[in-house]
Image (cartoon, rainbow, N blue to C red; front, side, top):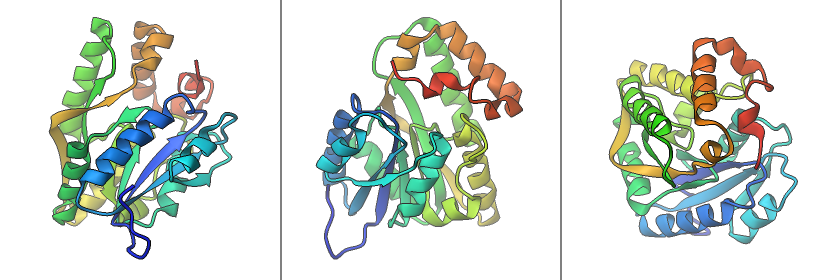
Length: 245
């Protein structure tokens, strides 16, 4: 995956994965293609988050470094991967998300300028979805650029910023990417660094939650958790993110 044995990786791609045997092979294949096309050497870290399927075996067979996080919480998995990373740049990628060479190169180029602490990208879905879902995705992209939020499916940042920000909040079951984005922004502002939002193309992620659950229910739940943030500590209320269809 565009790595060299004696050259430390410039960046690390971290994929938190819980029972992702269905989606992980395609994600890793696309990632391998993207990494081969960019100018910097990188590594892939798959965090096996207490999977009961072949997630870990698939990742190892694809040449990824696999680290284990036994506690089933996405923020814990992201932090475990971030701590294990050798690169000075970090890219957090969901196991059901397709990265392209252009997206990866753009993210690395932004970080390599020394002007940015991190960033995110506009999000698209891999299949047609009902209008309320399309509208909500559009609203997210609009708000994310203006509020300096990175969607959890693709977050890039400096490793020292990740460390200084304290990583992702481990006391919540969802929404940790928003809190992380806010912590990064505070760190970046104090150093006069900027947030990079990639708008030239969208990263494509899975619409599986929209296929498995009511669109209206999902939107209402997300808004409820966003307004009453202490509810993010409830695994029961956040259970949609901890189910596999």
